[in-house]
Length: 460
Image 1 (cartoon, rainbow, N blue to C red):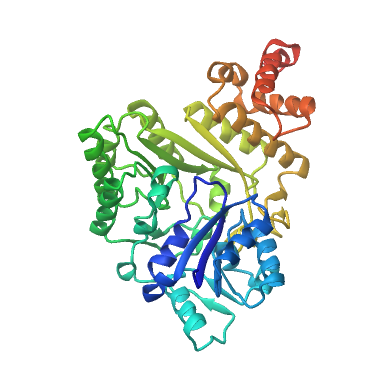
Image 2 (cartoon, rainbow, N blue to C red):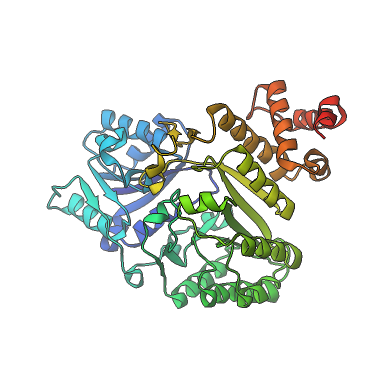
């Protein structure tokens, strides 16, 4: 039995919710009366409700995100029918803005918006011990990070064995890229470095070997980034047969010498960087308030690929206001020529609260009304073109990012990667009428058919 449940639906079992663990670590005396319960999207709604109610909760708090809002809405609606006495509290980025417009918010008793550790702890105390709060929407408040309890003891031994461990050395972002909710932040705030290093040491001592940092700007402050890299290097070099894997998100045009000197020392398979290029088009960058030195970003990517063993996962976004097919294709070709290990093609989404919405009228942005709120057409891209780009992105994952076609991929791309792969994508969809039901064996056959047939020759 637990009076207070903290629940979310993760995209995969390998994901462990950092947000729920931050909340529970900061409940103070209520922590012992609480429990974290995580599900995976796709689970049967009735089964999830049964498991939650078997714990006899008085309050259930749900973490709501773009990937789980539809199924969480169904779960909350079901709980309202069968357990109306249970108090439902919502939090998370999906319900921190536009609360009056969302069905799930209408179903809830309370909603905590923004940073929630302190606000949720106060609300939980009122709900469990009184007096009952009067406000339905409870604004979060930016906490003093030094006063927060760190969440890493909330990772169980099973989490350490089976799941990604998410770590944050800072919160917030100083940049204002309008497609991102971090554009609403005033700056980035660091956690105290000694506390972060102590937490990493504790996790490593417990057996953790897979760390994923969620910081938006890990490399912005070189001294902090260097200290964390040195932590991992010391353990890798002391125990080379017991490797550690660390994932960081890098600002693409900022790679100081102090960080370079450490990055080159990491062996293969121990370091991954996620790098958001998003667009190479300077006019589009200016339109969405993105500051990026393209030449310096390209030089940094070349250096990382030439001089280090780091695995590079680089992002582009299709559907940004003002970017047409020719511009996106030229950007893709520029990135492909650099040769990162993975190119992640995303379609622009209208995240609730993100400033990208200000371009809706001026650039005729038309978004899907249902999650994930992907853009359907723009003034520069038709619906049909965005459909083609969406299929391109899916097939790119299956063929290029999967790593299953290292030799065939070079033949597929030739000297004009975007045009060649788009032609292959169009042909593949015409042959299969599918993007998510293509078995690996069938995909091998189709790639071979394309490369050896007349169609592949015609676009070469």
